[in-house]
Amino acid sequence: MLDRHVHPRPWLKRLIATFPSALRSEAKRYGLVVAIDDGGRILRSLHDPGGVRIAHVTSVEPHGAHLYLGTLDGSHIGQYTLP
Image (cartoon, rainbow, N blue to C red; front, side, top):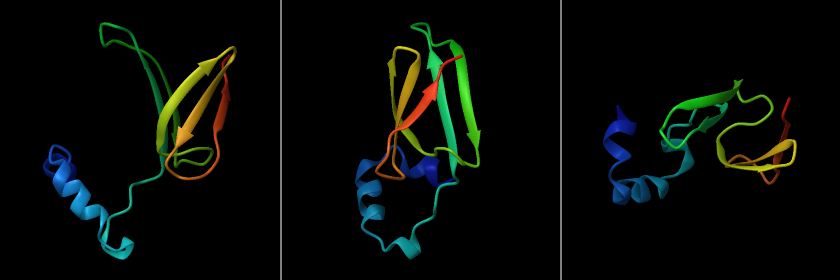
């Protein structure tokens, strides 16, 4: 419910970001990468339920046989080897 009301209002997101962490809800750990074609069709998805290897993926950069993953959670870059 909060996401539906807060997401379209950037000013409200900025306000909530100033709250002490004890007052903010924590997002569930989950890793997800989705490949979508130009028509919006899902080509492939990679999931890490529970975010054990990587969670809260914010960016993906393909390079050779790998995907490099940026995340909100840490100061590391994830690497996934494509099959």
